[in-house]
Amino acid sequence: DAGITQSPRHKVTETGTPVTLRCHQTENHRYMYWYRQDPGHGLRLIHYSYGVKDTDKGEVSDGYSVSRSKTEDFLLTLESATSSQTSVYFCAISERGLEETQYFGPGTRLLVL
Amino acid sequence: GESVGLHLPTLSVQEGDNSIINCAYSNSASDYFIWYKQESGKGPQFIIDIRSNMDKRQGQRVTVLLNKTVKHLSLQIAATQPGDSAVYFCAESTKGGKLIFGQGTELSVKP
Image (cartoon, rainbow over all chains, first blue to last red; front, top):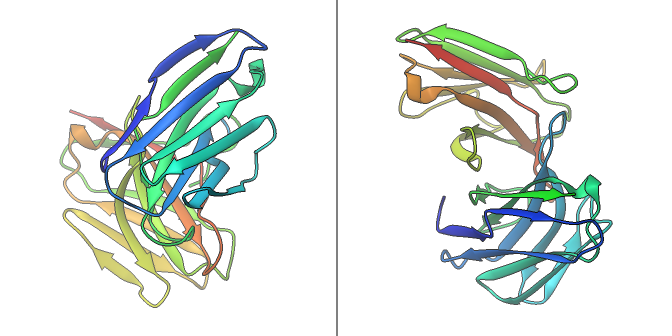
């Protein structure tokens, strides 16, 4: 998984609770991404980062926020989890721009009850 | 090819046969393409890429073919093995754009 770890790997939470997912990379890549993967959809971009403290929204950013205080760490926060956010979340990294090859972490399976 | 609804298209092949997985991409301006493999419970894994100035690129047991005229990409896997069983999907991008991912095809290898 190209030096990418995600934690936790599995989480069950209740509607309305905050949840933070962590992505950690050892590749020193500039770009980091959060995707969600659901049946019937391809990978959908939630947020991405192009440097420390530099982030931007993807196509499905509502209900999510991110932070990147260090090159190696990218956090995804669900401020108040909803059942529609039940999904598998993948972190990815790339050395160059958004259009280039991305390498993915192992994923976090989140269930919101 | 790309999936419709919740069920991915499935390709079933015999071990040792060659597999061909197809992808129809959407944007005629796309100039970079990637094939990923995703095994059950794991993250997508990069297999091979190709830029629009090429028609064919070969890797270890895999070949990607690009037909820009009909916006079609294919992945050929030679001598398919049980370990090749996975979902395969393509991704496309334009310069300055973002990677757009297809939904994938499930490859099932029968021993």
